[in-house]
Length: 217
Image (cartoon, rainbow, N blue to C red; front, side, top):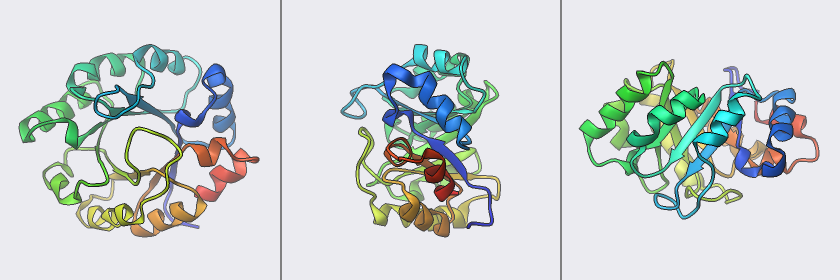
């Protein structure tokens, strides 16, 4: 059992989209801390998921923070719509922007809506690229699978990035990990210093959802 509070954010990518309210209430009742919402545009990643209207609908059915992960090109165009729809955390990808000024502008814009700003890196991106931004963001999201699809296997070498981020992070920085998370891989990430875990198929595919969520804490 980790001494620090671990934020568990089940991904609705693995939920039943015909019964989203039911499945969100289910993880809420079983101890989830946040609801992770994967937004994909079919360009930045090879898949398309949900958009602003769904986030707006989710806001009406849960009081849990909506942890919205923008796997999209041009994230700056969508910050205001998602913030106004009810996102509590907006995480964009380092790889989706071209330079330092663009990234700083997006972080500032997210924070202007009074919500948390997160920045994410894909498996092939080294954590050192985030050095200029550690003091600007509320959360860093380390992808331990290639973004775009659920149910992929955990890349242990990507988890090694957590150790570097931990050395640079302030105590308040949330270090989140997404991809192939289960009780075993979650422990690896927590031991490296992660304090937030995203899990989709491990939670929603479990016979006992509460036990699955508890095993990640």
